[in-house]
Image 1: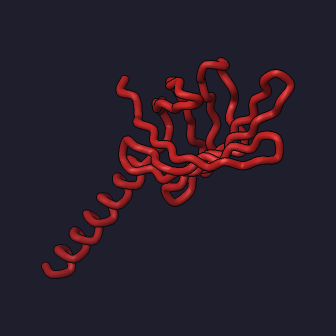
Image 2 (image 1 turned 90 degrees about the vertical axis):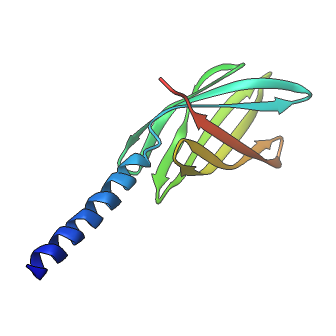
Length: 127
């Protein structure tokens, strides 16, 4: 009887851990606002997870841009977005921690040899 109780308890713990891990999936649509030069822009990120790999598209005022080098491991999301405007290339490197329906982290923006960091926090869009 004791063995059955211990086995049942162990199975329950493994099931709860597995479902918690499954709930921490970055796939979906994420939204946040960013302010540049006193103007606020809405950004939308569509992510799809395949193992540790992330693919997707970032949509902003300049249109849609595919993400590059997307990764998801141990609750950490990372990807790069490269945009060109007026002949100038800008690279945005996003890193963040997934927690439920929120991703919070840092963005490194590389432009003209300069790097600037800023915080970002996205919320999962409700379908």
